[in-house]
Length: 519
Image 1 (cartoon, rainbow, N blue to C red):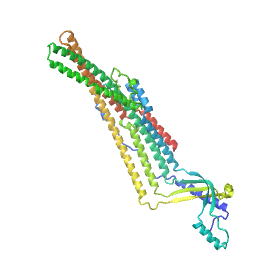
Image 2 (tube, one colour; image 1 turned 60 degrees about the vertical axis):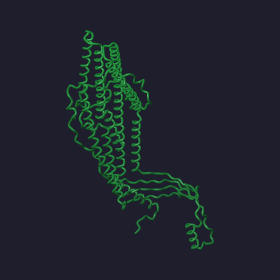
Image 3 (tube, rainbow, N blue to C red; image 1 turned 135 degrees about the vertical axis):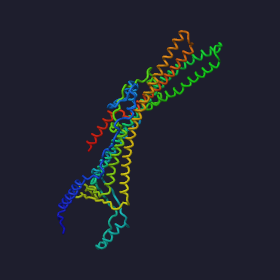
Image 4 (tube, helix red, strand yellow; image 1 turned 45 degrees about the vertical axis):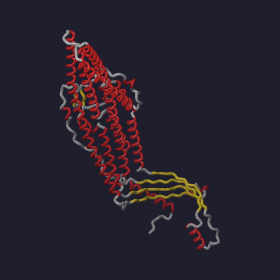
């Protein structure tokens, strides 16, 4: 029995109501989202840093288990030149700019993913003339119909025709199983991953700038010590040569001293190379051409780098919310988890609402007449029946990627613990090494002072005095190298602890706020 209204307009209203009812039902069903839901991974961090327990109490710079605060950590070296270099590097470094562009790319991809769950509307326009084949199927059917109607004597229809059309085309795939929402969730996680990747790049950049700068200053100070040693070696050679020529010593003593002088002079070229390469390395980190920093860097300070009396390192569990590489791997796991839900949604039916409407006419002057209007509206149901195992394979692939991301997170966390503890051990051991070298240098200087006193009393010659001075220079070089190693170990420790924690925390809070706003 036909229950459709006889009035065409009433039938159109009934069709519209049915479409709206179907859309409402689909909207209610749209609350279903395929799992799994992301859960922040849990781990049990060590209760304390093993490296701290092995640190002697008498080292000059003591790591302590106090709350870590890495804001502008490079300022602990109290060097305004280093502060300026780090600030400029953060603004100009090309790798950091590339990382910032990846954030913009991730945000743009998020907008594309969000558009997947929204209606799509396109305008269209058509105007043209066409010619049908006189020997084609359409002409043959028209000719046969004319003969059956007794109109064989009538003129054949013209093969030319015009068509004009203007309107719109709208489609909307209903997000019944949360595929589009999982896509947005994965895109949000990718944004966080890109932001944390930039944070990790910034920490690596600031650490590399500080390490290179401290190594440069160490090489410059080492060069000054070597020059002083060369001067002493030349004085010793002149004295030995004079004594040999006057018969007070063997010629072998002068030859031996000449060899020591040549060895001291041979130390300069590698040091000069290290200085030039460190300057160029800093210029590259600041996106500057070679030699651009030569005037700005100038000579090295006369004193060694002063290390802070205490270095707060916090607790191992703090790394989980501070190190960008851990936060990035967590965001990658979040994205991989959401993609499993996307793959599962493809197993279920999909409904697409669509409509086409506008004006159509074979005459351009009647295109806008009310009688020229047309529309087509409805819904399309697509049910996956047989895909050759493709959809299930995609789910297995997404699930394997999620498990891989989970293992990568665990590996990143474990590596972070080891990096930080190894940096603590290295810094503490170098402190003990520096303490021993400081005692050695103090002993060498006392020995030199005693030798000078004995020379003034006439008990030793100038050769013994100069030789004692040379031993002081050697001890100064060793102490200097230890100071450079300790300062670069401190840089490595700050990097392992998560660098500038305050900035990373601000980025994380901003990400969470923006994510809540978008949802």
